Length: 115
Image 1 (cartoon, helix red, strand yellow):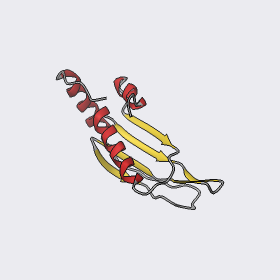
Image 2 (cartoon, helix red, strand yellow):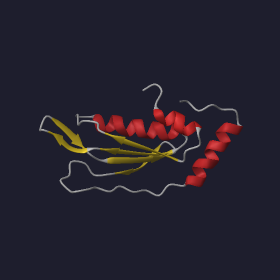
Image 3 (cartoon, rainbow, N blue to C red):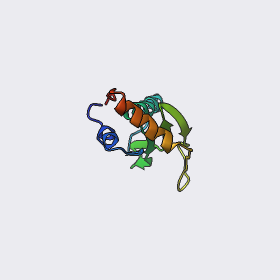
Image 4 (cartoon, rainbow, N blue to C red):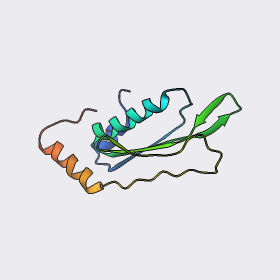
């Protein structure tokens, strides 16, 4: 997607980008989401947290829930999907200082981030 909001946040020095979503379920879509989150964390040089809406809309649209956390282009946590629980939790430990150092290196070396 061109002009992703995370790009502007990254340029302002954000450490973590939170992406709440209401993306409906489709077969194979989880792999697309994983790639999206990994690439966002790598391209923007941030820790990236994606959380999807759980539930359904009058039985017509299913939202599978789930959360994804990535840092440095690597997926570090995946939350459960398709649950009837009141809430689900996914967690990961990320190194914010390492993220900041990586951002500083990319800015001082003259390399532009692919945004």
